[in-house]
Length: 150
Image 1 (tube, rainbow, N blue to C red):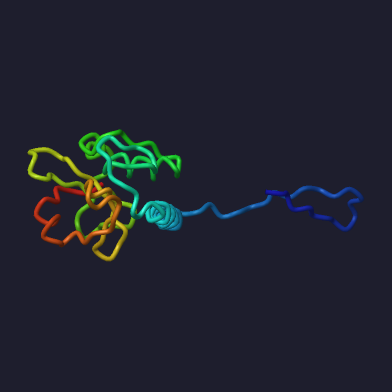
Image 2: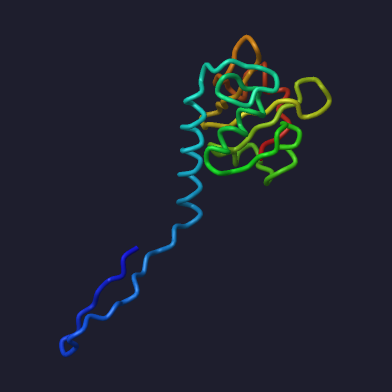
């Protein structure tokens, strides 16, 4: 930011006055990051699913969210199970766009992750038949398997 030059009436040389800018608040930053992350994620709709996939050629669920967040400079662990151990727990009604949602798909542990995008929907690398897609959290395929959000 350039300093503001302040001239005084009897002062031949200009003096620099400090430039004061309001620091962005957390309330302003978080929605912008969340929107950016969701925008990035939706660019990959239709990308094929591949177990262990971590690139736009093909993603698995955790590789997808890890890749998207990495685009924003945020590092996440590799697996859904590891990702579930990080961050702050989020209650269902407090879900915001960009939060990660985790599922136990009948394996006895966190085995699937997606990203909440608002409106009761999440984006994820679903499976080999469906690839990266958007689904509803309350759909029968996912609601009963939801174990938490961060």
